[in-house]
Image 1: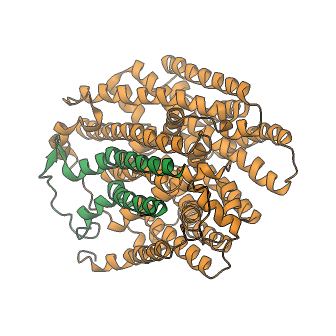
Image 2: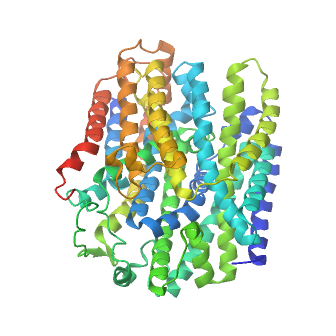
Image 3: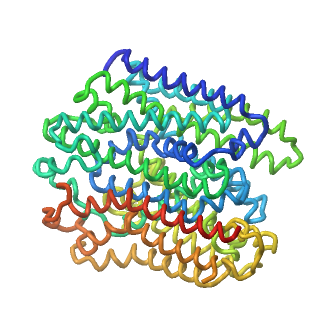
Length: 546
Length: 86
């Protein structure tokens, strides 16, 4: 993989050209602000499901997951298993209700449900931080792809890839992004699934034709060279709770995932699109587990040396070594589709947040036509700025993404879920929860990833591989506790706000007793306290701990 | 049972089952065997499905097909409630 990779360039140019075509096509369909930001709320379940697949199968999956499996074995797979199931968590807790709320964005929902312009502005600020974390990791992946294609340093890949994606989001808005993402999903499914089959077949797996379960007979050979591949014991049980909380509330809190539900025709389409998406995402993810398994087995059994800096390139190394140049070209094209679709979704939410939620809040009399014109310019500025910020990317793609999930889960996921399911949630409660959730997750991020602390310097309970993930088992429960307690002790929301909760659940009339009982908040309080205590008490009852 | 209570109960049950399929299931294999500070427990998978260890298959299939099935059931129930409301 050195020098110019002609086959890869051909496939990648094709993927990019079709994506840009959809961007221009989307421009023709865009007539007003609603068209631009939420595709006129006209997207069907299958199309939206495919677009969600494309969003979720970012370079985190394509490159980052394989690298993490290479590094963390079972733990990486457990993390992604939780991510797969979290789409249904988002479905049952949030998706159809958000669609009925008629907001354009998460930030607008927070501003309106909690009747506060200040919270809407705070939400925009947090959204920008979370989206930048998510974007930087994906743009690093695009840099890797262009490094493979052109044999150039990553920095050029980041510049070229970032600017191309900015172009088609800028011209097409949400129509362009949606149809581009649907096309990219099909490319990705093919580009992951077929090479995995070829690799498994080359390694001698009889079940190569069905990658999710097709490598069973290789298990004894794997255990001979890597005995701990299926080993779940090396982390504290709370680690799994933290992963569950981070993924389930993180996906609700990440605005670019939630935004997809604002684009569908109605709540029913929102529900079925999530089910369809989960099926496809699970199919791809389980195939990537097979790829990770094959990568670990190949490297361990062949004695191949892979430098830590190259872990994120393992997919390409494996495909190149086993499947050959033609399939490597398709894999690179699929990876590019994965990267640009996610970057597009993130740029879209950042631009929408700045124009619609920040500028629109500060200058409420701005005409829709002016907002639309501004949106195009803001997309360009956001795209260029983030591309430049990405020139100093993180060492590992997936680590930054996991932090983004944790921060979004605490700062957005918790107040959103309570806002949907408990009428009594007040603006003071939500505001306090958002601030506590953001600070308890973002400060550890800064200390560990930017300042360079070991996780155990914050707390000895954050020991072990990926031990910092346990921060989430504290930040999300404490956000629940703060939001509920403060809401209880402050003036209840106005009647018209409480009526929107019934409306979100599909009721044409209003009744005070709906979604207003004490059972839900008390149950959540008890579970949150137990979760926080388990971080400390379970640690002490393990006899093996020295 | 009133429809809003049915909605809340169905959602609560589905979410609880999801927590199992989405990750809590690993806890049952780990509880009491945390090995980071001590000697690693002996680990030889005794029960396997399609050649893969049982706990692994439960994790990857539960989070995929299990979650999809739970989502489809929940969606059908909510579709029914929506029809009655309208």
